[in-house]
Image 1: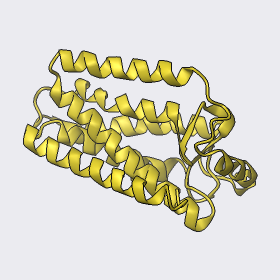
Image 2 (image 1 turned 180 degrees about the vertical axis):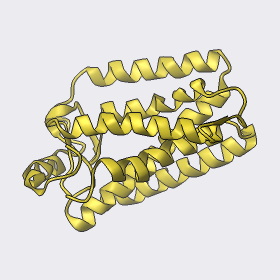
Image 3 (image 1 turned 135 degrees about the vertical axis):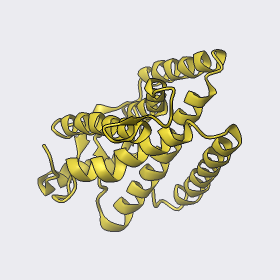
Image 4 (image 1 turned 60 degrees about the horizontal axis):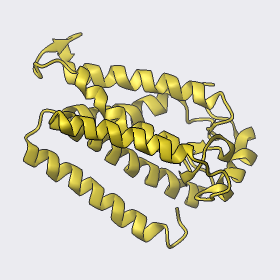
Length: 211
C-alpha cells in the first residue's frame, strides 16, 4: 500500500473514539517502558551522551509531528496517519500508539552507526545526510508495510510512501544526526526548546479537546 484510501475512513473514525482509552491496556505497556529505560540507562552508564542527544532530538521532533497530525485530524476530520485501537495497548494521540512512540524513543540511537569523521562524504554528500536518507528509506519501508495491515491507517489518497519519506522521516533523522556532532550546549538548547514547545502544546491542546 503506497498511498491512502478513503475507504478506510470508518476505521479511522473508530480510532478517534479510542484515543487515550484504557480499554485495551495491558502489561506490555510496562515491559516496553522498562526496556526503553534500560537502553537509556546503559547509554548513560557508557557516557554516550552524543547518541543520547541524537535519540532525544528525534523523539522530540517525533512528538511535534504527532501533535501537528492530531491538530490536522481535529480541523479536517482525519489525520494524515492513524493507529488502530485493536493494534495497541494505548493510543497517545490519533497517530501514535504507545508501542510506536517507544520505538521512536530509541530510533535515534541509530546515530551510533555514524562514521567518526563527520566531514567524510558518501555518495558525493556528507555522510550524515547519506545516513539520514538511508534511515528514512528503511523506516518508510516499514511504514508502507504497516499501512498494509489493520494497525496503521492512511485515508488521504495523496498521502503515502513518498510524502512520508520526504516530509517526515528525512527531517526526523536529519535532526537526529546533525545534532549528534554539536556541542553539548547547543544540543541542550535545541532539545530543551523542543521539549518545552511540546509540553506547552500538549498542556493547552489536550484539555481543550483538540488533540
